[in-house]
Amino acid sequence: MVTQKNISPKQSAVLNATKRREFAYLYTRQHKRFRTIVDIGGVKVGNRELAIIAGPCSVESAEQILRIAREVKAAGANLLRGGAFKPRTSPYDFQGLGETGLQYLREAARETGLKVVTEILDPRHVELVTRYADCLQIGSRNMQNYPLLREVGKSNKPVLLKRGLSATYEEFLLAAEYIMAEGNAQLVLCERGVRGLPSELRFTLDLNAVPYLKERTHLPIIVDPSHGTGDARLVPAMSRAAVACGADGVIIETHYSPSESASDARQTISTDELAALVRELAQIARAVGKRVCLPEEGR
Ligand code: PEP
Ligand code: MN
Image (cartoon, rainbow, N blue to C red; front, side):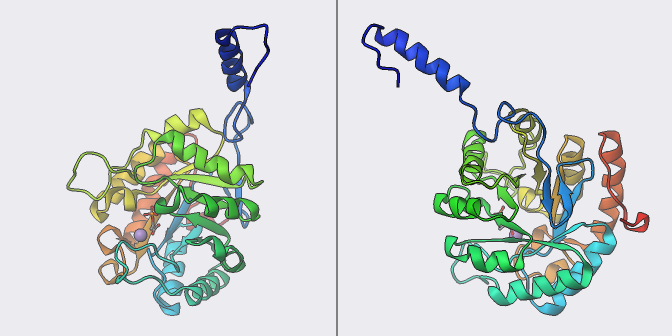
């Protein structure tokens, strides 16, 4: 605060306002002119090549995650998702396999060469999840869990931060700031749908977020059309829309047999559907100056 005796309160308020404008948060484009490229074990997010993150909502068994990893890789995914610690609405629903799930994920990653994105629920688990994961996912329900944000901010793992289901853009960006303020700038933002008007669908995928946040921040932004719609039938269209509006990638719940998924079965697409979708995304990517590396092209 400016507290000089010889200036009026109004003058001092104006001075302070000017100072606030000059202060640039770490997430802003004023602070960093060039776009951030996040490196997840060698897979770059935020450059021309789209991130295609696919896998089940939950890791269910060693066989399940290995088969899905192989199939999503063949479909063109470059990163593997799967929850070992699940934030379920009911405490009686499947909560994930915990560390065993992390081990299965790591094994599937080793077999396929895919890198792993998995959720961390608890600030006390940073050391544990970091041992197995290539990228720490902060789920929607934890976007404002400040102790968790600070802990992942102290780690040197890339972070995927999902937007809170009722969070404004400002709250979302300031949650990112918590992580960056601790020293971790390897951060990807993820729009995953918000609660709007009562809807027949689970959430409303807010694609405004993509071009808007691109104006406000240098951080990459990806889209989750699975949670954003809650309906597998809508996932391909909203994935295409996400790429068309400039997203740096998509994260899609995928299973070889969606109806058998232990969680989020209704919004999960099959690995065959993913393969068809990735081909469509490749075409749209070309139109917006991005690309998808299709499996037959090799990498
Ligand atoms: C998930 O990715 O499985 C998940 C729980 O997502 P969200 O935090 O967006 O609900
Ligand atoms: Mn899910």
